[in-house]
Image (cartoon, rainbow, N blue to C red; front, side, top):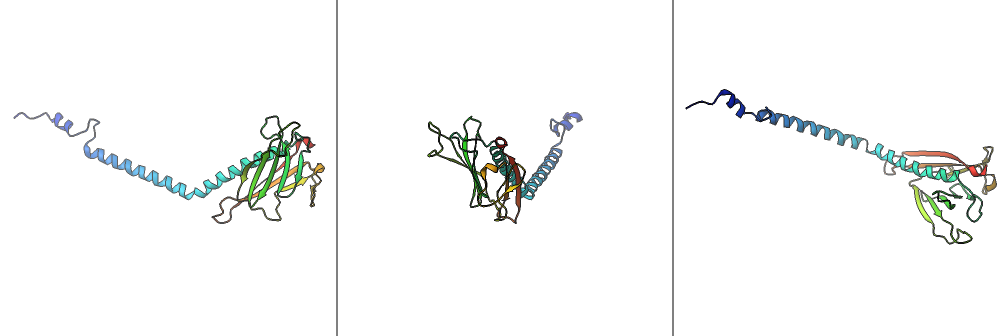
Length: 207
């Protein structure tokens, strides 16, 4: 019986790519181990840094909300009904008039803290002549788990010379800038990890 050429025998024991079955299985095994190792490293990274990632996300969320707050304070102006730009000023709340959505209509805005949550309540003017009375407000949550102590007010008020205005009743006509501070506990289920966000807004239309 004629024997097959040696070259044909060698070719028949290898895959078309040039690897034998054993070599192919070894490569697959190595790739599987590498994939498993990478997956384990990724899972370990996210488990080890879960709180850091959560903290970063929470800080960014609060910071974005406060940025809108500061913008509204800076642009405080007379209301559609002629009201003075600042309607009331307290340590845990402030009411201003400002065109926060750039629709050429001034809204009445209340920023206030209630049960550890910092809110923004917006009311649009309606009617002719325009009025804010009786108009439905819209409430937005800016920050949760706010932990300001009794000695750490959210709002502080200053006159044009930078002198702080104190007392039970702040003279609204003297307010030139408002300093806002929020102490936020980003994850109340963990050990105390309070982040402080603070900024001062100069009321441009009251200079």
